[in-house]
Length: 401
Image (cartoon, rainbow, N blue to C red; front, side):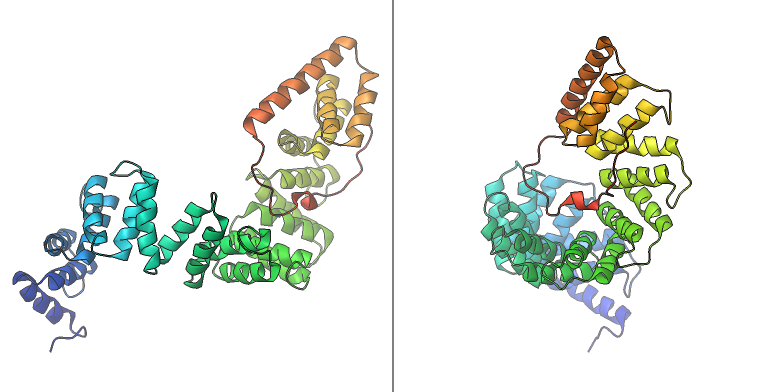
């Protein structure tokens, strides 16, 4: 009897059966050539035997051959051929082929895009327990059927699909498609976080930070924020920096705070850009530099942060980083004031007392143009943020220039 303890003998035995037309042996031989077990690895031989088995109607081989065409592995990439072989296997009930075929229809690869056909094949695969199909169905239904989305996310989550665990947690946190339940949200966030999902690590950190669904624990919050921050998750870097700056959950360390804000700021995080600017203005954790402070205030101000707009206006008015420019200062004060910043309104009034009417008109025109450009680049969000990002900002009292 040939066993897997002797790969060469197994390959020889399978080869003999494959030559006699045994489809399962042909498929197995293809796998052996692909892996190089008992034979010299040979992609072309693997494809040869996959095709032999597929042409005899073996669904596993048809699915593998479809994947080879889809990915261009050993053959020229050909989505139409991929759809052909996936269809053959899917019609025989192969769940993995049904999943792939559903995705091909949804994305319009190798076939005209058809969401109804895509849903049909994903549903077939999902009902057979294919976890990836369950996740994709959840995404598909998330557009307008949140209850169904949550149902499929739950099925995939229970099979260990990390993204499904996080998405299910978000459903419970928001009460979207399920009854709001922060404890259940925490359970699924923790599952995903322990598997290394950075966004879930950020979320579970936030829950410990705010005592939402779990007992408040700043040390655990910092732990999970640090996990996400180490993966480059900007929001986690920003809020962990704030914890270091305030000595909450960790030993106070302004240098570490500034380093984290730098990392998040370079990714475009407006709150971190603002906090880093404050660090450079005050020389907290970094060498004091009004030039760098102005740079980061500008980055944050361009993203619409009122405090940053006000501080940038002050820097422009005082000439702390460049020659005094009251027109530019007025524009930023005006924008900050329109954003609800009282110091911006007060400083705009003060700036006007030092400006000519022509300068005031020019500044107002700049503000109008800035708002127009900002709205074009930042359309209004269709759904609220999960967390209150305002809490990530360092509080300060703006100076009068």
